[in-house]
Image (cartoon, rainbow, N blue to C red; front, side):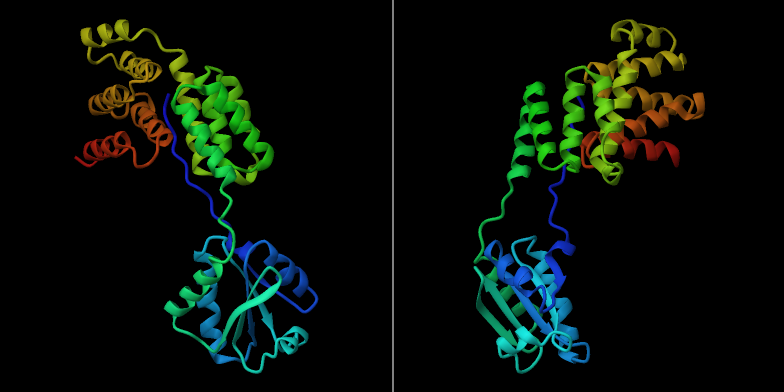
Length: 304
C-alpha cells in the first residue's frame, strides 16, 4: 500500500479577524470572548499610526492560529462602545476574556511588542482543541498498522463532524484501497465536495486509485521478470512488470523498471513510462525519498 502524508489545517484568517460595529459588539466581543480571547482594535481611516498598527496586529493574530480573535472597530462610524471604554485617542487596543476587559494599550507599538501582547492574551484562553486532527492521526496509525477496517470507520466518523476534511476523505479512500475495494474507494473520492477536490491529499488518492486499477490487472512478477530478461526490449512486458511490482508493494522496483523503459524508448506508447512515473510520484508524499530520487533520475535522463 502506498502511504500518503497529510498536513494539519489551521483556522482561516477570515474567521479570526472581523470588522465589528456597535450593533455586533456584544456578539463579536463579549460573547465570543467567553470561548476565546478577543482583541479589539479601535481605529479610524484618517489615523496614521492605525495604518501601521493594524496590519501588524492582524499578522500577529493570524500567526496565533486561532488562539485569539481580532475585532476592528472604526470609531468614526461606531462611537458607543468606544465612549463606554473611554477611548480618548487612537489607536487604542483592548483585550477581552470571559466577557470582560483584561488588558490593553494605546498608540502604535513595535512588531515584537505587538507579538508579545497577542501571545500573552492568547495564553489566557484554553488549549486549542485538536480533536479532529488527533482523530485523523489515530486513524492514520491504524491504517499504517494494517487495521484498515478500523481506520475506515474512524475516518468516516470524522467526516460526520467535518464533511469537507480533505485528509479524512483521502484516508477513507486509502483505507478502502487497503481493503481491496477499489470501486468503493473511487466512489468515495468522486463524492468529495467540489471545493476540496483539488486538495493535494485527494489528488494523491486519485493517483493511488489509478495505480491500484493497473496493479489489479497485472500478471505474476516471476513470469514477467523472465519475459523481460529474455527480451529487454519488450516494452509492454516491462510496463506490466512495473504494475505487478506495485501490486506487490515494491514501489522502488516499479520505479526502476519504468526508468529503464524510459531510457530505452521515452516515446514508446505516447510516453507511457513517464506518465506512469508521474502517477507514482503523485501518489506519494512529495518529500518521500522514492519521489526525490526518482524525479532526480528522470530529470537527468530528460536533460541528458
